[in-house]
Image (tube, rainbow, N blue to C red; front, side):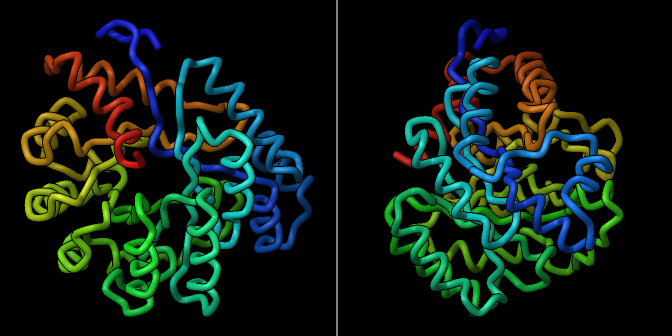
Length: 303
């Protein structure tokens, strides 16, 4: 892909795979039909076959010149959709499963998913599902991750706002008591063999996320989304300042570029890419660092 540093390979660490099953789950919650959901959103709903959505995403990534993407199953239990996509394009996709540790069958499901080789990461959303990342039920799942070579744990911290739920008028009864990255400190120390990814620079807990990175070398930050949490921070904090501080504390090898892309017709969110390349170019990072952040770090995470 053409960038200020010339042609650069790009790997997106954060893409939501909004499958047919994902929309069906929302329709069930709203007690509505899929047609009415589509009308309310004005989005394209995917075919029932997840392989067809995988084809659409590959066409979209090819159009933008994106080499690889990590696909996130965006409701618990939808990992089979992501697995089908990864199986279809194993050289292009990495698969992440969203897991709710409070569900009784979570460990059995995730053991099977990780053993398949098509799921490479488990995604934890403590505020969404209202549990502590230090819960014993989480430990049972992290034991699976630790036993699977190359697997990672993705832990959402900070502000959590699910735009599609707002658009549909669905309640989001999240609990921010479970959002602080500091809660992950003891867990990351207990599992030094696991690489933990915290998205959105901590999503409003930037200082705490940096402290966590400083204390735990197995913590990575993904840079995805508009990072609108910056408005909660000190005056004049922008992406340039965020990147300067993240590079200073975490270094260039623990930052993973991502967009938080999700739905069609918008598709891959090139605006996020443009904003982040601009910020990094303006603070004067070298070509080698750009290659790490935009591609190599994600690939090395799973190599």
